[in-house]
Length: 241
Image (cartoon, rainbow, N blue to C red; front, side, top):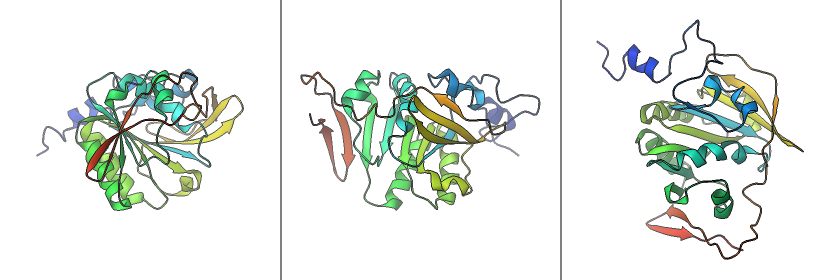
């Protein structure tokens, strides 16, 4: 006999089941707009869905991958749950996050000691229910791990984002949503490789600034902080000017 958490009613309530007559373009109660109408048109439910893992694939850093999620992070950071960054290739530039409306008090950056620890941190944080969004960076060849992370995101009603190289596009992935990003002079071109309840769509240009997190700010008097967690100590990270 199915438990309440695993019942069909619960899965439908979370938006985890696609109904045959329900098109992917219909708004979902648990979706939040990306802040870009062009991107919303590509996403199932017309926005970033809760309890879902999204892969963002790109060839080079600075292809607009972070700019795509900044409006969402700004909205989620106003809530009580955490926005967690796990092993980003660079420490996020705090003033740029602040300018984008992100509440830094709800943001933490985690540094792990190994790939195994990274996967453990991603899985535990997604399913804990304490995080509204978890961002992680994974190399190729993580098919089993991605399947576990999707289950964890659904269990914790968390929005999970995995940033990966575009060479992973041909690999099997359990992520319900996979987007291929290509830099463009006016933003980033986004192609949907996979989306739940729908089919791939033609690429669309999203007017996001690719270097939004790396540009130095003119106001040097502000010294916002990000909490950096690693090893046994927690540090407040002050961006260099």
